[in-house]
Length: 185
Image (tube, rainbow, N blue to C red; front, top):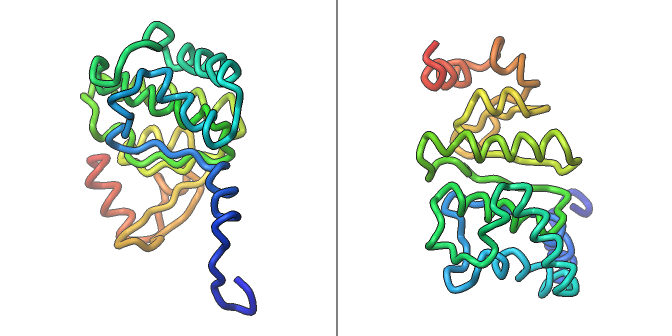
């Protein structure tokens, strides 16, 4: 903003900002023609200009972190949905983001796999200083890992609070209705 008006960023500046943000999608968005390793090192090598050996070493660390160290040479279609999502998380982390955007990362998963993916996100929240913006309907998870919770409706913020306040004393009726429907209160 300049003088109270929005100013479009120059493309070079946009790209610099994008390098600091990781994104994990609902549908994984892995490249099916590439191995797991190739999926993870593609952006660090081509966008961040990391040497391939360094990118591979970091990818192996991340695969170990997400419990898939033995899947480096597999292709995405050989993996379960939960494994693909863990690869997508490793791929986003390979960019060493300051901010990690997660869009309903458990919505396409079988219920028994959801806990695995949430466990990895919980570990990231506890062991890194990466800011995570998580769009989720997993309310217990949001309550456990969040510093702030925002309730959106129609693309607008309805309410914002610390997790305990949001889940025990929401001020807005829309938030109360949503939590009652989702949590069964």
